[in-house]
Image 1 (cartoon, rainbow, N blue to C red):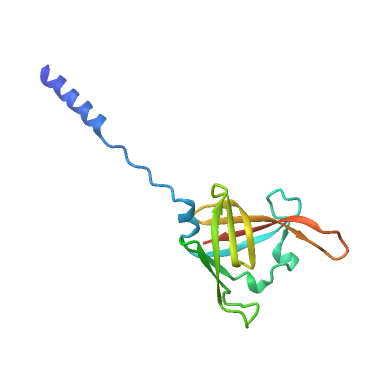
Image 2 (spheres, helix red, strand yellow):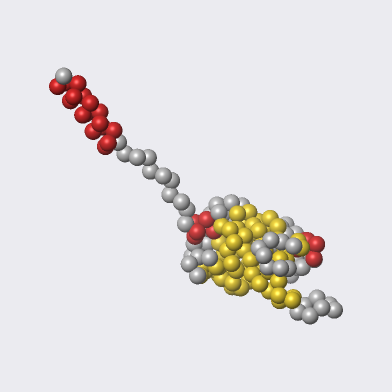
Length: 160
């Protein structure tokens, strides 16, 4: 009987001491934004600023088609490179340009200076950042012929 009790006690001790499998570490926002090159997926104007695209860039002509094949790469040293892609909008501009970036407001905003990303610079809200998707938005004022100035949201969705 003592040997059965001893075996049970030994089994319980083994189970209690067994290490739990460690959960994979979630990547940081810096690791996600700098993982690889970002490509334009889609984007547009959010007229009512509710977080969804109402008019695509392609429909407005706000972003030229030649800019839609551009890519951007964020580096861990807070610089980045944008590449004009196979279709350049202006042959006299360089193929690649440098920008600087920094998170702010508890990594909910990203500030982009220099040449910008996809022709856009300034402070952007990070609507979504995963290992495969980056959605940025910012408010901007536009003037359309025959209408008073209008503040709208700009949304850019990028993917790896």
